[in-house]
Image (cartoon, rainbow, N blue to C red; front, top):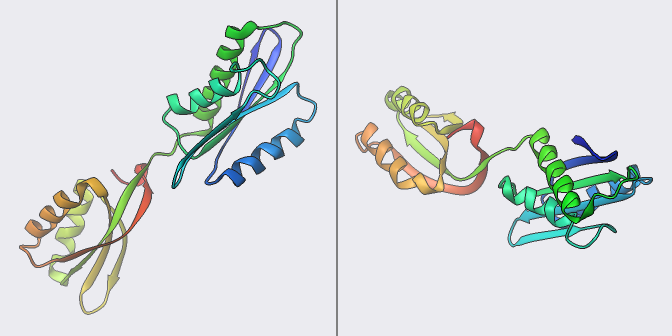
Length: 200
């Protein structure tokens, strides 16, 4: 959440991650109820699930001066699966079209930055079957390369589950094959989005 003031008009940006249009609409409805006495509750959301879905509303502001700048702030910061509502309490002075565009875009950007941006990367889960003598070496290789070890299962052999960015599968396979002298059995399973801060 972030708040700015322009010529006595108060702008409040509230941001939330959303996975579907239903989630976005519920979030927007909740804020309209919370800020029921505001002059405007402008919103935009950008969802990249199976298909890209983007929507915005000027909520009574002149066309293109409010919702679109909020949507552009989301895209400028390269954020997906996000809804932003910018609430305005009118301060008595008209801002003009360019003033509105600037105020809504600026407040939305500040709100997104205040909320924090989580970077995610599409990874495949690598399942690596090795004997115990290779465990330390492969753990060191994974750590050195910045890969996230999701789990290690100890049975007769060791089964390591490691998240590998999909565009690094070939390199990863070559590194593990070399480190294990070809003794590691590697297979790849489901693809999931992994927070980049947790790995590469």
